Image (cartoon, rainbow over all chains, first blue to last red; front, side, top):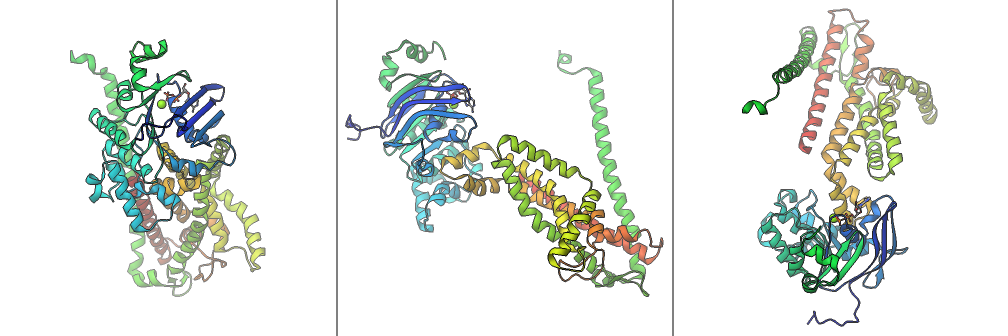
Length: 259
Length: 296
Ligand SMILES: Nc1ncnc2c1ncn2[C@@H]1O[C@H](COP(=O)(O)OP(=O)(O)O)[C@@H](O)[C@H]1O
Ligand SMILES: [Mg+2]
């Protein structure tokens, strides 16, 4: 049902005429793009084309770099993300980010999961407990870790660490998950399992995933955006992009003729 | 063709020599420390042949030239303790704040200036700081508190806090900066503010380095001699408040070693103080290195 969306309904995230400069270098050029609710959009393109920059722009992780300047606007559920009066904390609660390398905090599994809740919510111990259980369930870690909640998160294997990083977002009930090459530090089996997890998560979340692995993009995504040198070259349904791309550049990249 | 992979013979010889030289230097420095400690023991333990052990450790009066001499170390330990605690109470919170500011908040250019300044402070000889303290800090303390003399434990604490600060700040700053950037980003991306990121992630992650810095700062403060001697008034009485003159263990040794007759009870009592000081400093450094190790 969900998938037969109303064509007029705006996307979860809308990028409008967006430019980003690192000093004098323009990393994103006049990007227009809309991400649909509860679908997975893959951002692909050769290294350095601005994939991470776009993803970081969506939850404003670029704010902490010197000399970053932006133009245009990004909307989350029709609310602007840039500009005065934007509540960044509120925004980031709703739009969470998973990084290239798993980065759990040097705390216990339990404390990692509820890190965000502790920041933003006043919850009782039992409410926290149930969030931990629910979040770990939804990333498939509950069975493994239910009895190890006070284990140091850094002692977990990579794949579990990455799942934990997703769990700590899920615990805050976000609606968008941004993932920047979430499998690049994982082995093929772990990668496959995270891809299955993404498939599960899309029932509840809008997911934007950056990947340099085209097979992965084809496997996990409903939509694909191809970037080159800061320009959005082509955007469309994944099966279309991978079978009948409109642009020659897209076809060259996808067929591996360059990149 | 194994030869192809090995380095030329003289390289290996040099490497061997350097390795042995470094090893030798290490051994020699250990031997020196051991010899110093043995010497201290030899000269200091003699005291207890003529003077009761308990009177030394629990005596509350230090007057070596009275007849008979009273050699109670308690006022000196309390003197050191008062000055040190005072210094730590001032230096640690300030040092933590300064380190956090430099590591996390200051913009790039200011960071460099501040780091340079801290290192410069560390290079000022303590006697110079003591002299500056004597002519500025001491009169100030006297006037502010309306007390007969500004030569007090409190003045000494302030000055020692100054001396310990560079050590504390630069070590803490290093350990804060060593916290992986990924932790910061992770916290910020979860909607943490800068402050929440600092106190919920960075400080816990850097905690062992921070504690090590504090311990080394304390070590520096306890061992300090000349500047303290100039500023704390050098009166070996039991302190009741920080606004009284005190005398530390180090200052006692430095002040009295010249006048003590070699081989006398007084003379060996100064060495006994040295033993106590050595053990305290050793324990502090041991704790510090335990913290540093835990970080690895
Ligand atoms: N902090 C930065 N300062 C300056 N240039 C940057 C910075 N981060 C990224 N860039 C540049 O912006 C471009 C896009 O980078 P990025 O978004 O990381 O690419 P991708 O994730 O697609 O590999 C690259 O040319 C990169 O060199
Ligand atoms: Mg990238």
